[in-house]
Amino acid sequence: MDVSKACESRFSCRKYQDKDVGNGLIEQCLECARLAPSALNKQPWKFYVTRGEVKAKVAKETQLFGANAFTDEAPVLVAVTVKPRIADKLVDKIKHQDFSSIDLGIAVQSFCLKAAELGLGTCIIGWVKAKSVDKILGTSAGERTKLVIALGYPACEQSLRRRKSMEEIAVWLS
Ligand SMILES: Cc1cc2nc3c(=O)[nH]c(=O)nc-3n(C[C@H](O)[C@H](O)[C@H](O)COP(=O)(O)O)c2cc1C
Image 1 (cartoon, rainbow, N blue to C red):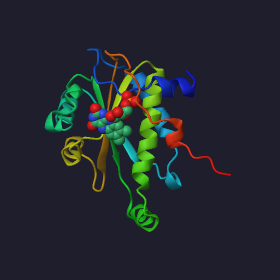
Image 2 (image 1 turned 60 degrees about the vertical axis):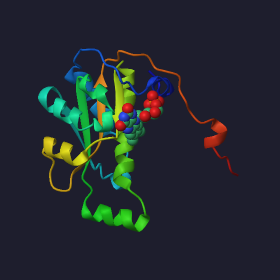
Image 3 (image 1 turned 135 degrees about the vertical axis):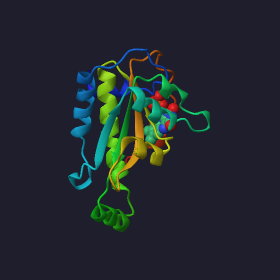
Image 4 (image 1 turned 45 degrees about the vertical axis):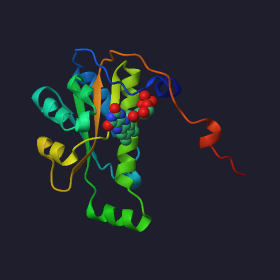
């Protein structure tokens, strides 16, 4: 699958088949995430692949105010953490940026595009009780959960894409 096709076919999947995803497929997604660029090549991310009881606990921490009930159905939840070092936080302050979050977003998209190529569904979940997930994962000091990726075989179709027009998002200057 070429990159355009992967970008077109990826969508937020919120209904999954009752079928596990093999480790080999998940490893391919992780490899694409691993190759992602990051500010100063810091690679501040870590991906926790959860199934079974741990996954069920993580799922509960994504279900705030009735949202994200579909995480119960997804066979795999991948929690993604960042651990910026003190020096990185200083750079962020000077540059008024949050490079770790930008880095993580790029890596997560790489993961999701590969999943789309493999016929897997994903949904990036930001509505997460991060501190509770940290506890479940047993993260180290300064390591924080930022996103959770639901992963599985889709049991739904891609719905109509609602996107801004090209005129709204692109500015060409010369
Ligand atoms: C950082 C981020 C956080 C998101 N959080 C959630 C979420 O908590 N629950 C959910 O169902 N979808 C979540 N989404 C998915 C978006 O709603 C979705 O990407 C958007 O509506 C566009 O739809 P599409 O992914 O199908 O193209 C999130 C997406 C991103 C990038």
